[in-house]
Every structure is written in C-alpha cells, then in structure tokens.
Length: 507
Image: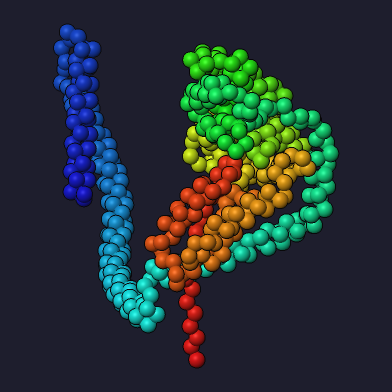
C-alpha cells in the first residue's frame, strides 16, 4: 500500500512539471504571434528568456508545493490504512480465539450427548429388565396389563360421569328437576293439535258362509295378492279366517285394498293382476299426497323423495301408534320445547318430524331405524345437526347436541302419553318376561336384562361355564329363538357379556 502511494506522488509531480513546461511554450508562442513579422532584437530575446526562466521557477515551486501536499495526504492515508490493518488483525485474532472456544464447546457437547445416550440406553435396559421381572412375577404381559388398567379407569370414569354432570349442572342452574318439569308441562299443555288416527289397519278375512268353490276362488285370488305384495297368506282353520301379513307397510296396505276389492266383486285369480296395478298407482298417489300434506303442516320443504317416505309412515305402526302422526306430534313438541329454551324452533320441528323416517324402509334395509334414517337424510342433503339428532334419538349414536336431547325428550313424551299406544301394561310386561325367559333358559346364562322398552336384551353369562368362543354362538341362538317365538315391531338387539375377575389376597 505504501509503495503504491509513493508512486502516485511521483506521477503527480511529473504531471505538474509537464503542465508548467506546456504553459511556458504556450506563452512563448503567443508572444511570437503578437510580434508578427517584426524582427526581434537581443534585448527582447533576453527578456523572453528571463520570463521563461521565471515561469519555470514558478511552475517548479508550485509543483514542489503540490508534491508536499500529496506527501502529507499520503502520510495521513498511510496512517489510516495502518490503523485499519491493526483493527483487522485484532478482529482476526478474536475470531480465531472464538473459533477455538467454539470447537471446544462442540467437542464437549458431543461428549455430553454421547454420555446422555449411554445413560438412556442403560435406563432402557433397566426398564426392560424391570418389565420382564414384573411380567414374570405377575404372570401377565404388558398389553394385557395396560388393557386391564385402562378398562378399570374407563369404568370408574363412566360410573362417576353422571355425578359429575349433575354437580356441574347444579352449580350452574341449581335444581334442574322443577325447572324441567315446568318446561315439559308447558310444552304438553301448548300441544293441542288433534291427532285422529284415520289410517286403515288390516283385519282377518272371514271364510265362513262360503261354499267350497267360492272358498277356493277367494284363497287363489288371495294367493296371487300375497305373491305380488310380498305378504304371507295364513289360513286359520279353527277360526275359519285368512290373514295377509307382511313387514312392508305399503305392500300390506295394497294387499288389504286388493283383498277387499276381490271380496266385493268376487273376482277370480286371473283378474287380480290388473286390479293390483290400478290399486298400486292409486296408493302411490295417496302416499305422495299424505307426505306433501305433512310437510305443508310442519312448514317444511324438501325433495319429492322425502314426501314419499313420510307418506309411507302413514301405514306404519309402532305398538298400535301411527308412525306419521307420532312424527308430527314429536315435531310439534320439539318445537315447543325449543321455544321454551330459546333455541331454533325450525330445526327442532324438522328433527322431530324426521326422527323416525328410517321406519319407512327398515323392512328392506338391515340395521336400526335411527341409523337408517340418518343415512337417508344425509343422502337427501339435510343439515348435519338434524341428521345427528335423528341418529341419536335412541342412543344408537351418543347425543352431543341440545337438539338431539330435545328430540329424545319429545319422542318419549309422544310415545308415553295416555292413549298413544295400544300396547297395554300387561302385554308389555309379558313381552319383557318372554324375552327374559328365552335368554335365561340357555345353559350358562346367569341373568338377563331387557332394556329400552324391549328393544334390547343384555345377557350375563358365567365365565366358568361359557367360554369366549361360545359367546357369539350363544348370542346368535338367542336372537334366532326371539325371531321364531315372539311378535314384535322393529328390531331387538341381543348383547352377551362375559367377564372374568380374579381376586387374590397377600398376607
């Protein structure tokens, strides 16, 4: 850097001398041009030389001044460069020291990590050894122990859940029983709609007073009706009656209408197919009209399939209660309860009306009518909240919304009000007792508990007499016997429970 600055000062000095010489020559040329063609004398030439020498001296002095200034500036810059180089060297030294310290820390960290990994591996080996010792002493493996502990914790939480809910609700709103009774009473009193059940019901066909030819003709025509409507023709010889039974409500109603027409007009078996075709068209129109009227009464809109499903419920009965009227009544009650609780009345009315929509097709689709109805409504584009309320109204799905709980309450009120169902207390108790008898007569069954108004039966077996492999076979056998021996609407769920508990005392 110093050599470069010195060379620059020399170049500046030479340039200054060159500029001065050029200035002297230019002045001489100007004087010669001014003199013109005159002849210069010795005195003039001497004066010109003197002036030239003076100008050269002046230029040399100026150049020396510039050189000294350049040297001074060079010295200042050299000092600045030396200072910068010193600071750079100091920083470089500090960086080298920091790099060395960082290297030491990295080595220490690697050594620490290695030590931690070694300790972790040792702890893992010790834990595995402890687990092996525990499994050998307790004679149980890890997975079984985890399942046992988690199962007991879940049972304890489930047992304590109602109490925690009651305590939480009581802390917020106080005693809820009087408030709930008041709300339910107001809802029932405000529900004053008339629900006259005008739905026709099939009745036995009397065969008395018919000669052999008319009897054969009528039974042949009824056989054609039964084959076309998927119903079963039964003949009671003792009572001299014929009945058409079936699970399909539409087929059952079609068979009823056709059988009445056959009896009134004394038709032959060959005349039945055209009659059934005409009656089916008329019944389909009637079903759609009933569904559209129900939607209009409930201030709802929906796809045509929804109206058809609701119309089918007019011919569906549950313990003698008309399913469509039950759905409408549940919708009204649900809306009134929602109004009392300052909730959305429209959604509540829709959930109440549609809660049993699955009963329109549960004879063709396997499963609970609540789940079937929820899936149907999903396909029809119904809101998810209403779909959840429909699926949860019999606890086939855990209710998680206020709307679902309102639907459950309204459904229970409509089904349990006086005169709603023709199922007497005696018949109801007989059905529960029959369920219990069918389940308990099997070997190894300890107790049986009919639940949900006879829709489910839970069977507890003795673990020393029934193995895990026999549980599924026993459950299937009980279900088949219920199907063969009992008459019931809907479905009955059979659950067999086998539990083994071991207790030991250490003294």
